[in-house]
Image 1 (cartoon, one colour):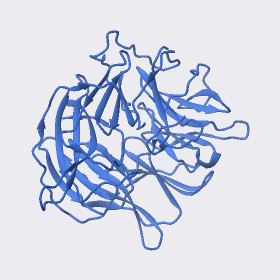
Image 2 (image 1 turned 60 degrees about the vertical axis):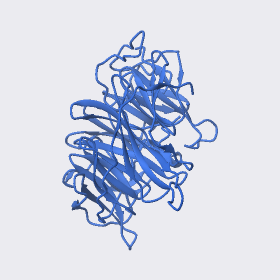
Image 3 (image 1 turned 90 degrees about the vertical axis):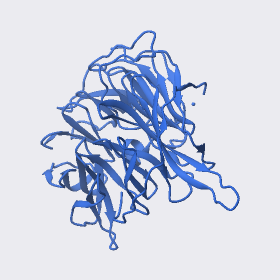
Image 4 (image 1 turned 45 degrees about the horizontal axis):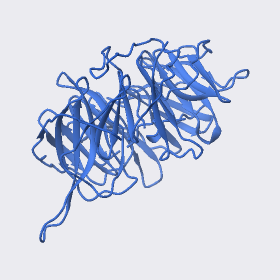
Length: 420
């Protein structure tokens, strides 16, 4: 069971070739349509609101210690969770699934669906000019007529997080067609600006004016995270070294860069930091927590695992996990100072497989058993739920099942409401 989209790790990147592209006119919002048919992103902090579609609103629990028996099968696609609604990026639009009523609504793109579909990333939930929106990217094409060739575009679709109604569509001209399996996603919305990535093409779109601020074709394809007006990206040098570079969300210009080094692995770590680690598997020899806004080293925690993912518990702790190739390791860091709080394995304790963390609780599994740990101490908690969530908030959890194949493109996602 695991997150479908990039194993819960946000990724993508860039260079400095500037191109200003004007957006097409945004389309007026329209009523979302019922949907009869159908993983995952980092958890979005929910507001304490009740779903407007639910006949019986879900109850929020904190901490979450149990999930209900009723299972809601989610449509295929990358998933984000906001309060009692699962939002899915699908080829036919932005789908809202009310977990209490199981009702599905879809906000469709205005353009014609591209015949070749890329791999869509999860929707992004963000406050835009005081309104809570859910935004995703879709691939469309405009068939040519006469001697005019077919053209392609990325269409951003936004819905109101509370009403589920479509708010607008924005069309962003693409530099070419689309390829199957290549990532297309809204990386983040920061200060009312959406950072959009398709393969190695990058755009910055102002969601208030509907204008493209800048575009970078053929940029490096590793974006870690976006925070405080800066995009944290990874660049590779001609000597096979890597460096992390900060780009301005507003201008695309480089604002800081680290020294290129070999044998480095980077992961997003919390809302405003990136973790840079030298070493392999469970043999890290140098770990740094960097501030996205400035590139400044905040802390150098002494930990052994080279993590595959880190997750902010939306309280005060960053939890990181190593799980690839069957080697498990975990540790917790203070989200503000970067200080190491705990680490597994130890001489007398095994490291479980990390899945998620929320409000002081870590959700993990070991030898087929569901476990919960205290996010601040790493100690076992007594009240583990029977299922291990890959995304959760106080209202619901999302569970990703890779079945027998373990392949990220052959997963199913289900949701359950919290019950304790």
